[in-house]
Length: 278
Length: 114
Image (cartoon, chains in turn purple, green):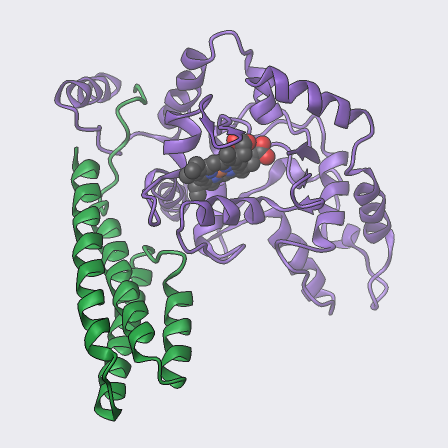
């Protein structure tokens, strides 16, 4: 199998046509991580959770100064208060998440019963709704508080996305996310991979393009541009708009599957949220 | 290779549609009520193209906005602007659809080594 894939890849290079997409998730992840190992040979694997600052020394200096007084700290405190405050029915988040608050490491996960990818924000809202509370918005606002707290408490856990073998729909969801990642979109005709793989390390206007490896380890993220903390799906929305593609719904199927694929690519990397970025 | 081709087709299409819309816009300047119906039809067609692109996850960012603006221009009787926007929206709808369909089968990029 591996031989065959190698052959296909070689043929593809020779003919200028890319290999077709039949590889296993593990083969995908290896190829993905190896790509960066080759391009940024001096960057150790455990640096990638630091995003673009793993490859941009100037940006990094600025970032290290910011991290001395982390701008996301107040959000962690707010989130802790949220976590501890009982719902109107007297229950708390802890009743939904017995292992909480350090639960970020198990998401996104495949929910066999509902046949869908469950992300942490979605799970939090399911908990709220089951307890008669209004769901939180998925891009801006207080969902970022509780996510900040959970991310902080989960620091040090390892990314470990599981694609259960006993449900082919899980692999299908992963494949959809992968397809999304490599599909060119929008008037500018860019895929995620065009920027974050092919051109990683290059500059686009005033920005250095960061590697996609580690892209999921540190959310939610405080962005100076936003002046606040925002979710992964908010960030992806921005990246879709940037190429003049219509973004998809936060926590809709497309972005959840995308998150499933993208997080899988970072399997083995440490969680280090919340993060701070430009 | 294929992507490059799509790129060329898009540029061509942009030039073509850009050209067309100016011609139509010039006609629209001396428009009366039947003209309004024509513009309305153009907007409806463009919205169809938008929806078709969306059905394959290929909708571009500004098509919806263009159509909103086209409708507003139509309501004000500014047929020239409305036509121009509708034509642009339609062509972007069609290009978004073509772009997505051309990539129906995922091809992994050759810089990833398996």
